[in-house]
Image (tube, rainbow, N blue to C red; front, top):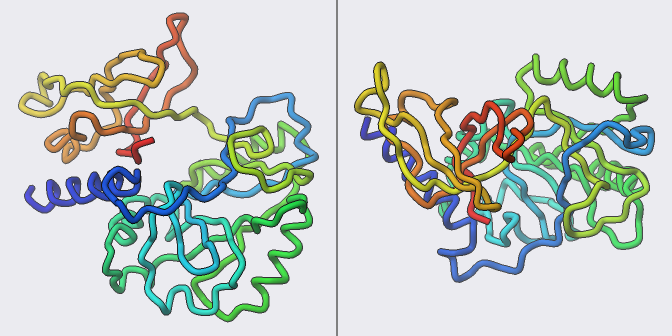
Amino acid sequence: MLKTITSLILTFLFYFVSSGNANPSALNHPPLPLAHVYAQGINIKNYWLSEKLDGVRAYWNGKQLLSKQGNVYHAPTWFVANFPAQPLDGELWIKRNSFERIVSIVRDKKPGDGWQEIRYMVFDLPLKGVVFTDRIRKLKTLLSRIDNRYLHLVEQSRISGHDALMTKLDDIVDAGGEGLMLHNGNALYLAGRSNDLLKVKSYQDAEARVIAHLPGKGKFKGMLGALLVETSEGKRFRLGSGFSNHERQSPPPIDTFVSYKYYGKTINGLPRFASFLRIRALK
């Protein structure tokens, strides 16, 4: 029990620090492209397809690995040995369904041997005035010249259409993956959210702030029954599924942000079949 509570507290502290609210040494936010959610009707033939890795987004600025908020990931010197002097965009990743393990490793300011499990999976090369298709070619050439077993290129492929995309999504999800990413081959590397980068999932996900802990009943008596959460639009709802028994005994603290998945919305704008995923970074 004590180990579980300590782990949850440390995970929360990692997210709080990553938000930039508790780290005065935070750098400027990297100029990262951000994804919209895929919707049928887009000309998929213009896009490159890759697996959506459930890791930690990391921007290599030529000297350090940075979080989305601009905080430094204190990677060991041997991990970033021979990394190029030019920026890279990617994900710190171990394997499917290993998000919590990754967080437990990268949150420490004094890096340990756990970094040996991690790979930096690179999916973009931040270059001005160069479209994504050409950036992929340059990235392949660049990484092929670097001797570092922790540095890997994310596989990119083409997809013929929506039906093929859905088949591929089913295969990835069945294998334990989170989803897919689509990247417009004609897109420049530009900061902000756009349809040039799309995430493809069998469900939608979002974030909400924890307002209250609601007590459990029956088999959950004495534990968390549900979280009362509030979205950025001010919508409040109960989030009662998706929790492990450990999470019900030590629920996410009040005022933290959590990620949840859902399947569409009701006529009142509330998420259907919402289910807890994890504690997430503050915006």
